[in-house]
Image (cartoon, rainbow, N blue to C red; front, side, top):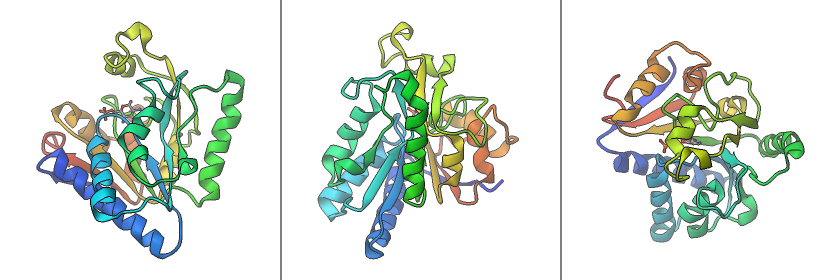
Length: 249
Ligand code: GLP
């Protein structure tokens, strides 16, 4: 009920508007001599946003020196320099092209040994808490309504953890991995709780293929089977959509 939806003509215009909001926030925090804590996402949906942030850095002098970023998720296991690693994705699309400090960029570690994952996840959340929480969280949405890799059934108070990927999520990713048999079965994801604690949440979705899940998330009942529907209870969440993703609303 609380989710605002903003519909743009196309994803380029939408991505520019989101980049503008992020740039404004970074500058406000700079003026206050405060760090700006961004929750970042991967997938195809935020690519235009990162391209625009890089442009704002190169052409308009936007500095990322005060930005501390925490990515939502990473496949497990995953080598950081592998083609499908979210570490590599973030470096290639954003981190390598702006002046963010490497030590301020956090992406869940896909190389941990199993027995260390729980402690690592606790520390990941503790780092976010020590900085006062996430100022602005960027999200995409899976076709099944997942946010980060919080699949159907994830609880609203779920913590950062190792999760099993849904079959449908693995099928969606299988093209990148050259076949389902090579696609990871598990991932580390920020839990729903930390996402819900972010002061501002922007979920981006493009295309007709997302239209049903956007309707279910915004107008359907709040349910663990569609984790994005939890955002109905967030007091500052906006779904930024193109016309096609919004076509069933
Ligand atoms: C993956 C990511 C999610 C992302 C989703 C949608 O599952 N872990 O964070 O939201 O894909 O991807 P896309 O933006 O490519 O549709």
